[in-house]
Length: 209
Image (cartoon, rainbow, N blue to C red; front, top):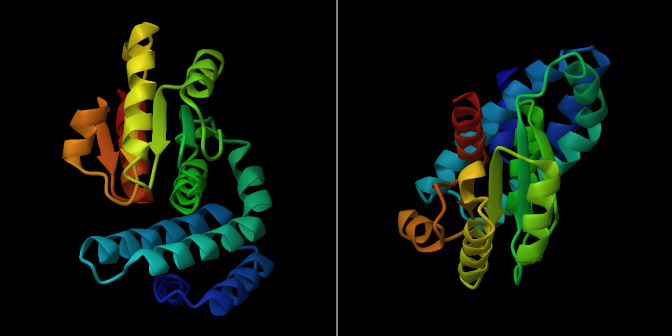
């Protein structure tokens, strides 16, 4: 179904949905369709890394993904009900930041790869992350933030986890527009992901250990 993959990569929204509906009518395996979506997202992520795609393209790809998930979500859940969940991931955009496109794409991809994801939403304060961590008991914490002011919020969350004696109980990934290795060190996280594919790879590696 390379045509479907190509249309996603080229961000042809209407054509993607048209092809998706056709595949669902043909009873294509929803997990196979998701594999194609993942392949397309990897290319989009690579293009963003090489500066061939920019923020508007990422926003557009996020919008296409939302629509794909609306169509595919129910079928995907049916297919996954028979599969054991890989592990828990707690996710949210940190306090002071209301960007959710990147976070939603990451949630979508983690969900599609069989993780049990709890999404706290946007502008989430540190204490809510701590409370949810205690209740949900995830192996992975994913902190999202697009604005530079989000870095201090990430640091605050991780510092509070240390104070509560919870830091060693969870692996922490961060993501957002300007996140890099320097920011990982500054906030005290374990790693960062440049895109949703990175997030899935990190979660998989950490949970399978």
